[in-house]
Length: 219
Image (tube, rainbow, N blue to C red; front, side):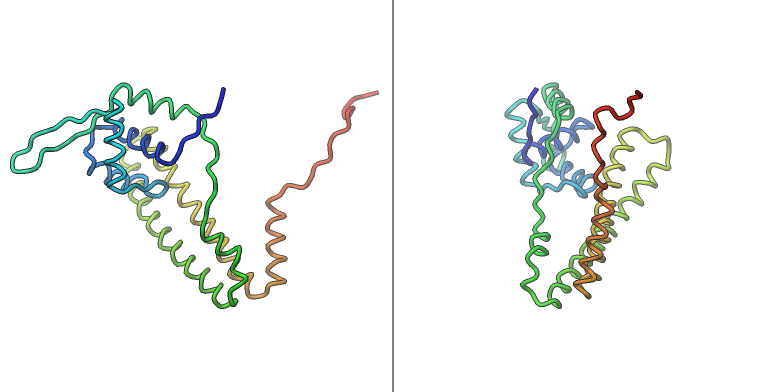
């Protein structure tokens, strides 16, 4: 059976379907859900959301219900259809290939030897400050999430949602640790290179000898 590959646009569609599987929402509501619930791993602007909704309405994955409101513009709620639920479930059950890694900051680090050491240090310090701000933001969201969990027995929906938040915090904490190590390594390049080698050695398991064909056999 072949592996189904999904582009970022397709994943946005499925994120929208996921939110609509919880309850009907307007495009404006969806933007708030993205910002409040999944911005630590997926962002979407209002135009992308409305474009996705329009395409999925044409495909029969969502339906638009217009609700008249006194003294206010009509409310356009988007409801997921049975076909939309089937598409969401199909995507959830399909394997995803690891995404290609593209990190512009690491390209800068790779070629930063062209800069004076002081400029490289400034670049790293700026990245540390940005990561610190991101971590503070994630921790504020985590405080709200854990407070909500304490209100009663958690559901599987709440468990998985907070697990994605934990994933985001772990990634930022790990990057900060790496940045601070690298910043210290720059102070003495030969010693710093040795420390990098030592750290890498702890991450790479030692080669294990292949067992002989008859290992364990008794004469």
